[in-house]
Image (cartoon, rainbow over all chains, first blue to last red; front, side, top):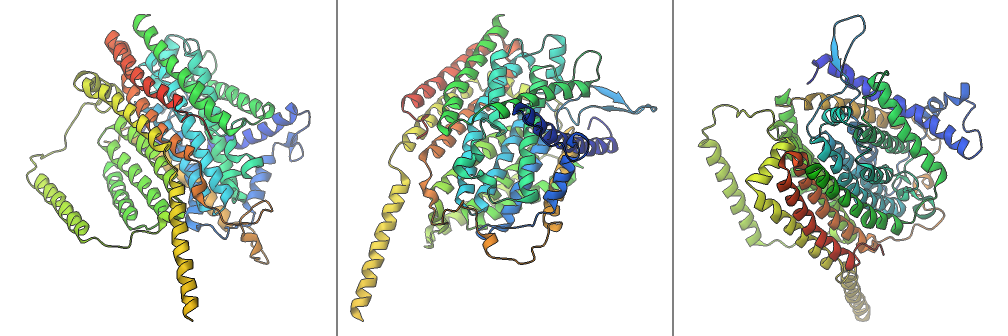
Length: 329
Length: 191
Length: 120
């Protein structure tokens, strides 16, 4: 533990709640922004500028009747959203928000990250891949054909882009010589943001990240014209919201990961670390929302061939070129 | 804290391993196997093998289990009927193998000369250390892995582009149905 | 020897707590239906009759994707330890990397030529 037990416990509690709060605000931001993109207002009735909309939504979702479909396997059906959400929140745990800070007015120091691990990058990928099973369990346990089809699709899509995703970041790993986020951030403040030498890797990473978080234009797992709503067809109320929540938190995690790997993470002039992370991750989240508002959904065969025939060779090329650059450059 | 985690992870590992064997439904058994893999990864963390733990989750839980679940979904509900026939020689072979492992563990524990916990330096188990071992002592094995993966990729494609297993299953079903129809019609004739 | 993982474990416990609370709330706080009709529990099929559905109708491509994913995932996991020490290794590491990637590249070309990457 980098800090004592009590500080760690407080930090963990605060980080989980800040993440959920940030998610709540981002749902409002997303709906307002998409409203703007589509030349309409978006939610503006509940509270000033519609800011209380997430709270109203929470209340509504909590009061929804709890229905378990007839053909479902109840325990697995309930387990699925739990797995999805736990893994999604868990994967955010290693994000660095800066170095050492102190509690104002005291001399208690604490670190602005939960933990520093030498396999941090792999840990995010590992928890992400465990989270996939929430979708498959949900699709299987619902006892409906659209759910199962959506779950299978989701997994096929996620694993295909997992390959491009993990291969694209190896370029960053070669430059940094480490898988620890703290080291990667340190390397970038010593040298240059990795987006400059790793632009191809960055592009592959971003495309794969959109597909990994199951968001438009790659939201094939819940394509309403084809599989109704995919793996969460049979889910309603809070349990549906947990799937949506997990999906959005995955998008937040990937944005933060992009900020750490390519834009120097929490390092930057003037402003404190957490604020820089918020700005950089917010920038990527804006791109996610922008894509959702403006792009049509791709076909499934297009999605698969993009992942396997374009992104995989591009990421491999990026890997070999980066290796040559580091060794001979 | 480490002791508590060790007990919890070991208990989870044993319980989920039992569930894999006891569960008749292959999908639920596969989910239990996932739990087992995750518990093992936690035990690896306790052994300070961070990279192995991450690789365990990514490769086994993230890739191999996807394959298992796809095959289970592909074969479909037919797979839920286990083979009811009992083979005596299988039972005997299983007992002998289990007994051999038990004796081996008993010998290993009994003759162990480890009095205290092993101590390793902090860099042990890190990807850097693993990479160094890969490219010095085990460089031949490292390159052989790429050949192995090549063979696996080709084998997967060859198997996958063969006759569709579902057709085989359908064919079997059709024959069973025909036999049943025949039996039913004969029973009707007798009456 | 948990080290830093202990703090992550604490964080994961909180994550599970949040998810568990939401799941519990969805059962405990939901409105009770006044009349529990059986119709409500039927699966949602968009007006199409439920009918029989054989999962064996899945495309073989799912199996192929999973198989290829295993191969490339293992390749990538092997590349990570090489990537972190590539700079100190220098030319030797680069050659090792190229051989490793080239052998798999052969497999990739074979897979492509066989049409296993087409989604049918």
